[in-house]
Length: 217
Ligand code: AMP
Image 1 (cartoon, helix red, strand yellow):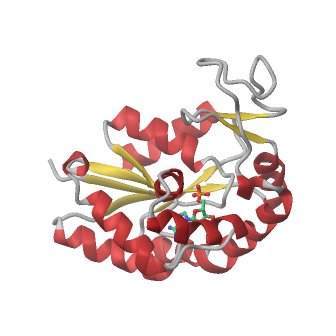
Image 2 (tube, rainbow, N blue to C red):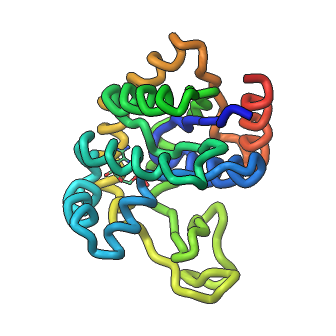
């Protein structure tokens, strides 16, 4: 079967990560999140991690050349043979072009681009209240609180707030999204790949809409 590539589009805080993980699990695909890859490099104190850190903490995008190289390397690994759910990539027109060129080499293409829509004021509230676990679970101070404040329900480890989820940085990330990533909405709409999904619904309802979008693609 031809590999299946799905690009999740939407502003920071739309729920791309949560939904991409679920989709990847259901469809037996790999979840490729560039944000997670950069955070992993940061944790491992690699050269790329050090370079990425200054951009990430300011809410800016890491330069295209290094980002593209990292994704090319990740998608070329054998675990991606069946395809991937891309979360946080592409984020610029140059990245979208690079992705198309890479997938062409694999004799494949992007199958569908779900665009998770959420208004700006909801994003700020969602991101500023977000608490992360080191194992990848995501909580929210009000909407999805852990049983004990700042403690992961499953393994009891301490939760943390992402450096770039501080309110000032959140606002800048939304601006960067509007300027650099939002043009991709039209790009994929023109290609007939875009499917709009209402991201203000409950998590399960969003997943259902996304599955429908993939099945009908
Ligand atoms: P995320 O976890 O997707 O919100 O990404 C966190 C941060 O990682 C972003 O604010 C950027 O600094 C960086 N980043 C993630 N994906 C990309 C990308 N495709 N291009 C450039 N920078 C990225």
